[in-house]
Structure formats: structure tokens, C-alpha cells
Length: 254
Image (cartoon, rainbow, N blue to C red; front, side):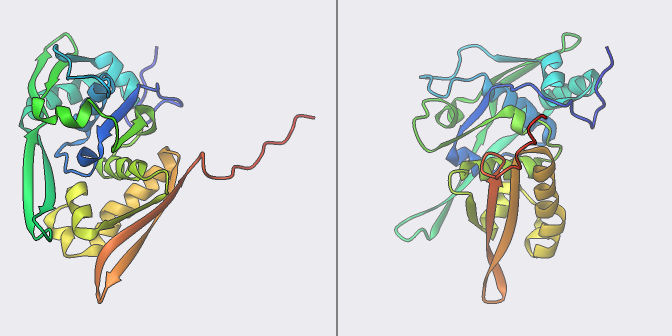
């Protein structure tokens, strides 16, 4: 059987279950590259968001399943799993919030993604355990969470696109996501050089992400910069999904 090309996803990727996270986690900095993001997303689909606790045993991800889910060849799957195993233990979530009577103080919280991770060379599998500190964002979820089918994001090749996708999915009921520019940079983890230059942010982050979402997901989105004086202070994303867009009817067979 011929292997799929590295950069060409199959015509239809497997559903792969749902990625469900508390909105606090959706709007935090994830600190993950593409391979690590893919591994974490697959592991999250194996959780029950209404469970009382995280699983007692590590979650196993097989290279063959990883390859099928993301439309990559076996070599790429092994490589990304191996690299994720080497680096994921050092990755952490950064959550920034304003606290105090008038929100004048900034609280920064950092939490590791995993408490342990194992890679068995030659076996083609990774086993990971999520850190207890992030259980509150992955299980016992009753409200304030975002859920999407992994297959909708699996073809994405940019973490910018994936993070934008997740945050738009959070507001799919309204089709509008408005966010402070500073918060947007935190969520997207843009380079510091972009933060003082919106033209670079738009050219290298926003426009490519919007184009990839339009090409590979069911989301068609636009962005409107909102100024406060001469400075761009907020971004307003408006979007529709394929289920919201009126599609042309196919001609009836003769």
C-alpha cells in the first residue's frame, strides 16, 4: 500500500474523537510546536470531559494511528512522536489574568502539560500522563468549555492556524471573536518583534492562518483591526462555518 505524502493529507481524515478543553486553557499560551500539539490533541480525545478524574494509567498513542489521523507517512509519525517525547516534558501552559479590584495586577500561572512521558524505541508508541494541575481544564467539565472534532484541525500545518481555529471554535455560536491585540499575541505566541509591528503580525501570522483555515477547514473568517487613536488596540474576527454558509444546491439528476 502506498504511503501518503508528507504534506498531502488524505481526502478524508479519520474523525479521531473530540478535543474538549476548558476555555481558560483555550485562551492560554500552549508552548507547543506542531508535532507536540498533534500528540496532545490525540491524547485529549481519549479523555472523557465529564470524568471525575484523569485516567490512572498513561495514555498510549501509536505511531500508526498518529500517521492515519494526520495524513502523514510512517517516518514523519515516528519522527514527530520521538521529538515530542524528548521535549513535551519541558513544555508548559502559561495563563495570564488580571486580578485585583480594578484588574490592575497581572497574575501569571505556569503549569506543565505532562507529569510523565515514555517512548519505546522500535515499538512506535508514546505513553503520557497529563499533569494533575491541568485536570481542572480537561475533566469534570460542565460549562465554559470548547469542543471540536479533531478531524477538523488535523490537516492544519501551522500552530498559528490551529490556535486561531480553537479560539474561533470557542465563539462559533456568535461567529465573532474580539480580542485585545496584546492578548492575541499571548495566545498565538508570536515573536516579540511582531508585537510592535502589526503589519508583520498580519503578514506572517493572521493572513496565512486565515488562508489555511479557509482551505482546510469549514471556517471562512475575516479580521478587522480596531484602533484606539493611532494604535491598533483590538482585533475583531468574524466568521462562518460551512454549516452556516448557504451552499448552492446540486442539480437534480435528469
